[in-house]
Length: 482
Image 1 (spheres, rainbow, N blue to C red):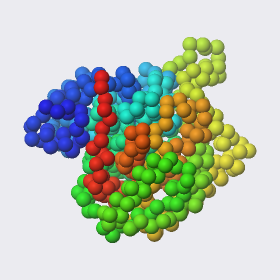
Image 2: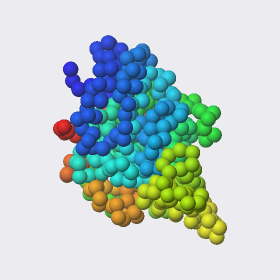
Image 3: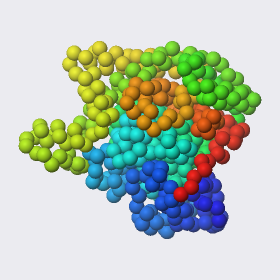
Image 4: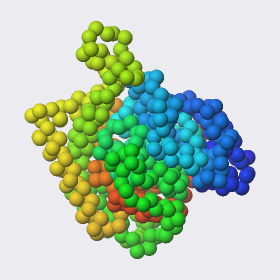
């Protein structure tokens, strides 16, 4: 029998329902592949095989995702499992409850299996900020997989996960999906409950799937989307049957090409692959229209003012008192807090807490944070104006292929620019998708990004599916040996 870990969700569903395979067989295949490959890749932080196997043995394969193991980014709570957010400060913490997305996965028979590596507290674009170890790109071990959902993208690409849940605050699903050659979806803000997600930036964070195909992404999104009373930002909107509308095609659709996203600054291989993707979409019946998002240049600055301010507030709760790592040096309470947080947080997290605290401080709030919120509204209006002219937008997902490990660690600004095409979608609250669209000369995957209006995931997936079915990029897998 073929390696079951190489299959996607939809393929395994068919085999399970035909009784060709069993859930324990899938789980063992995934676990065996992790055993062979993950010491080198570093995609996982932990996994509980025995608990997952017990669930697999009683799984109902007639349920929508019955018996399918789904790997989970290590900032989404799964009852009884570690949830460290890739940080030393949460060492020893075990989640006392399931996040809403986990409860919904369990409700349709899926099996949460494995805690995936990530940039600490989702702060990073390369997978190098984990407190445990860096994740490597399965296509080239000297390259980053992208971040912050580094383990999720690498595991799906390497076949050490059937599919995964990640989170996207400024591109943290789409950017690693592009760099690892898989599909990643950032749902609209409020489409998926954030209850049980360890917060980085509460007005930007969204949970979404990373998968091998657009169909698999649609299957997972159907399950995890929907209103949740436990999340005050959750949107009360019906969840479409995403898989039913995938094959509608592109005839009659107008796709906008933002001139600011195809500037001279992008890598030639990225531009070449994107131009070929545009030609393919045109052949499929879409009309390509040039549009403008005039405040694109300000999006990085606005993002890092708002995200760090919210991070400063959200991470204040991690003080070593109720759970997690504590300093062993205790003299007085102020010193205890200072040492616990200094020892527990990594360099990038400290940088963002300091910046966020500064922009919220008296005398600087109006100059920085309030002004950033005003420009955020201008960015949102840019997208509103664009969507008045076109149905969706297309762009490269990243300006370059995956860069080398260590290449940008000492230059935070260059690292932040890796998300130049992705973070504006979070500021505007719209939905986005990245899917494979080619390779660089070094055989590194490249991604096509599709952006659609808020709550238009049905259209987003429809466009992605049409492109995917017309190309073979999603069938490519890295050559891996143990």
